[in-house]
Image 1 (cartoon, one colour):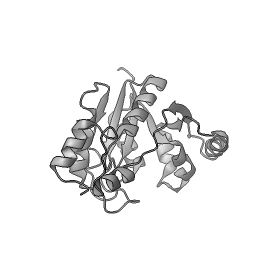
Image 2 (spheres, one colour):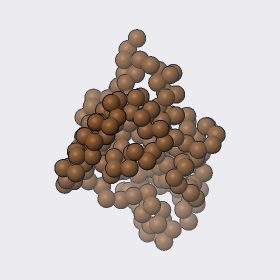
Image 3 (tube, one colour):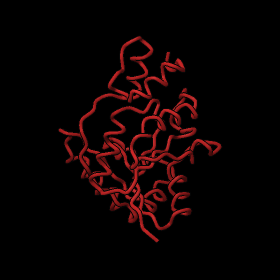
Image 4 (cartoon, one colour):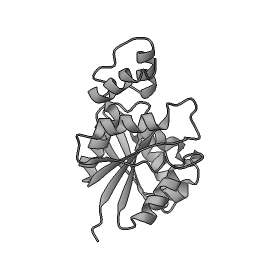
Length: 201
């Protein structure tokens, strides 16, 4: 059975924006991944007042539908209760043990990983692919990465470079709420969906 290399892009995607897509594509190219699997979170335990999960799922679907290397999973939005990354990766590896998974995160996330639920089980299921933006200092990051890999024998962390894109989903929601344009910050199809459904107004 073919052993595929799959990148996992998880998040609330509220909404998905160009930065997410740039990061996903940079990971795909650097690690020579066969596929990037986008997984919108269902009920993240660390966030409140997020947009309905079905709407977020639909926005991601629209954003990636023209890229044959990008796919989407409803594994988390269909799971009852809080959403935890380790559960998702455990389920994926049970269903497809032949695949090799890369869990894609931003550089800042590394410093908080030990606060994630059952982080050792997540490490067991995947390589952590850390996106480093242009101009980002990696010295402190590498020190903390080495600490994690020493503390957790199953921890595998690799860095890759991505374009600098200093906009967040929070800023995009705020722009929309205050009547400012977000054209070019989100894919056109996503922007049309937001406008048609009066999201973030």
